[in-house]
Amino acid sequence: MKIYTKTGDAGETGLFGGPRVRKDHARIEAFGTVDELNSHLGVVRTLPAAAPIDPLLRRIQCELFDLGAQLATPGAAVERIGNRHVEALEGAIDQHEALLEPLANFILPTGTPLAATIHVARTVCRRAERRVVKLASMPDTVVPANAIEYLNRLGDLLFVLARHANARDNVADDPWHPGQP
Image 1: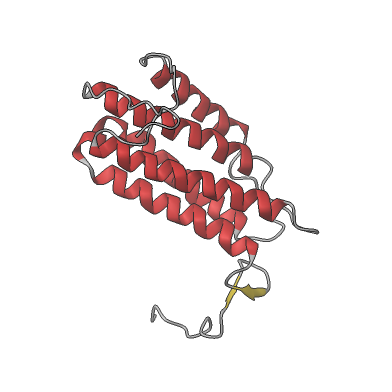
Image 2: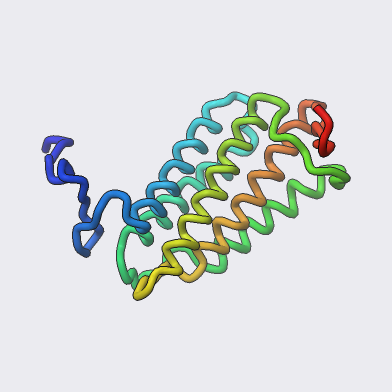
């Protein structure tokens, strides 16, 4: 089977079990951004320093594929991402946050290569969340019940993981001070 079909050459693509839509449709933007996030997490996983969190990141990548499949299927009846997935993210947040000093300031997204790369994934996660919120606001549109909540918690987890990566390597958070270079 060839990888190219030429069916998208006019700027449209087919949804799972649904109609063809423009490639800039809100549904395509939503699951495309989830896919982009998944790829960024794949980059994070290539860093040797990510080894301790690799099983967690791999599980999240699989969940993001499930979420993307749900978003790509109009009116998907099967819930692949549910409360248990959100609760698992919350558990991981609690576990990693317990090892950190409380924040006193906003921090700049920097530090070790692992932390900086996780911060990039975090910002893509927040964009994916915004895209799903936009999709959910469209008339006659169904999105998975826990999609927004899942992405919100995942963004929180990625923030905590970035801080934890810095702390593990004794790199202090770089505080942001308004109006100061």
